[in-house]
Image 1 (cartoon, rainbow, N blue to C red):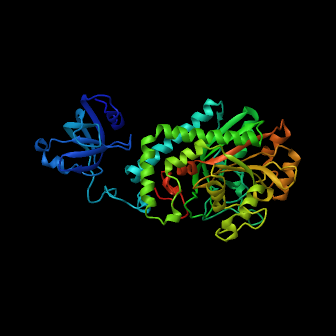
Image 2: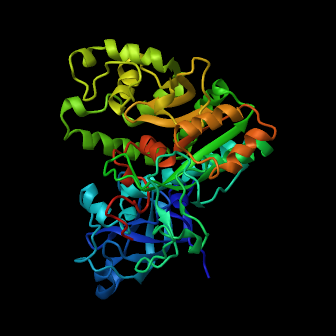
Image 3: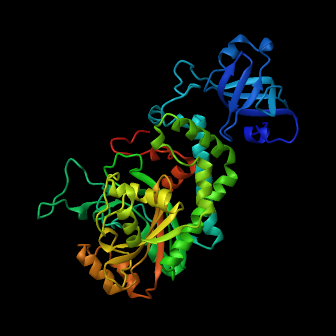
Length: 478
């Protein structure tokens, strides 16, 4: 059987070709003659010119938007503007019909909300085809970066009995019959009768398990799904998302910041080198979208300019204390333009503060470090001042925080005291504490929400549009 050629390869051909076969889906069919065919390999369609006078009327009627077709003919120089080559069709076969009146993805502008309701078909649009190709390339770049640097890829568990963040907003996993839950003598649910014999949840992070592997393999990374049962119905939150979490033995916070900066710049550059057409299209899409917004809400930088901004500027490293002083004295705070005013040290920074530091004050990506201990997780190393921890967040234009990390608390006694103060059960994390008993050493790591990265690189504004099937409160369709 003849193997078909991808549209991308046909369009990139260096010469005309005799007898090619292309398969894909019809985007448009006009004048009973011109098929715009796309197979998902590129943002661009290839024009297929049908000999309508010698094609049965019944076949022509079946060439509708969304139909799957196979075309065979010669790849020739195009007579029309906008494309180098087209296919002069000699043989056309309808592989799968598409009812023109019922197919939702008609060649017109659709709202993003409408497309979310049709997430199983939205990838057939230009925008979502581009987003998913960029996402795929970014995922490969993540693995490529760590593999070439000698990191070991570790698959940490999705079902766990540990809560890495201490937040408690987790999805419970159970095999117990919900209509007849077994109870113990105290009248509580008897989890000893559950599948795992204990209370278990979907993971919020692979970090704690990743640390144990870093203390044996030196440098590891995880890249997998994580889950938060946080009832946040916002454009920045998902209940199911993917996390990238490297952990490195013997790295301190400065090493950690160096790694994170180098990693982010690498994967963004990789996407720009390998997704130029898709990113150019997404930049144009963003410019069109922003025309409908008030001037004050528009981005100051176009998409490619914003990506280059991250590549061309060293990340400015600023302590939390210095950032608070800057924010407290800045004009938006003094004029009460911030939604959350900064009055004192210890405030948990919001996206508006993070973006001010990046976009207005420093005009470069920013790494904030040495945060107050009481607003950060228990596993972060306590500084000598007793009130701050060796934490760091990386802040980007338009998005705020994109990476969170820290030097981990390697001292057994200090870690135990911190866990006691927060009411974290030592017995539950006995295995984590063991790594501080046997050959403990300085180590550090960070977490990058993959969808936040895809959001930044594609210029999209809602995180639900950069994952195939978003999981959000009251929504688990598809």
